[in-house]
Length: 214
Image 1 (cartoon, one colour):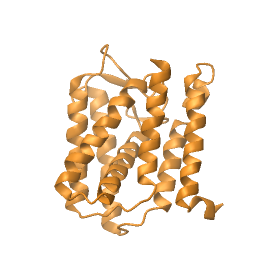
Image 2 (cartoon, rainbow, N blue to C red):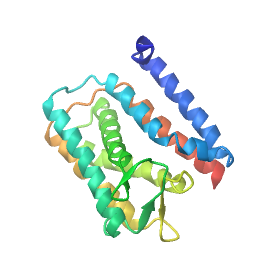
Image 3 (spheres, rainbow, N blue to C red):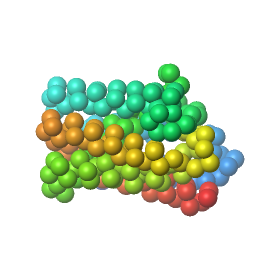
Image 4 (tube, rainbow, N blue to C red):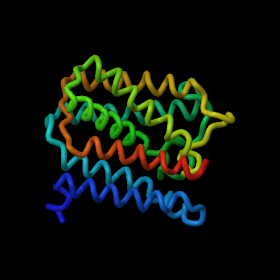
């Protein structure tokens, strides 16, 4: 089993199968509640596979930076959801699992996963640090544009207003850029053959759900 998981091609097939089944479960209303419960597991599976395929920087500095990214991502969401000052007025549902201070613990992991995969993809393309900061934040903003459309259906979060406020997208880009700047300033190398499959499969997953539920 371990040999299967450590093979990049086979691990990608596993992700494709997992998210394909997830699409089927999400687009049908009768099965959606059961598949919503699997959202935290999907994040954990993606993170686990990224960890075992990581080939870049491996030191205490990287561990500290990733921990800071998790805490920053979590607490900016704590502040955001409890005040409405950062992203706008919104509230979390049950889709992302256990919550502390009205905020899912998984949301910090989601920030780390997106920073890691977007940085890894751009580094593999030969981009330099200043471009990665702006490009990585823009990749994440593009991802969020689709995610925001399906998040309420997947019981991840809902907005108090009728639509997603522009404030959310501006804040998302700025925070993502600051996080990418932290990675760049510490000269971390995220070499991972699963980074592109993970972020691309997730993006396609949300896009297909949006097409079927709109």
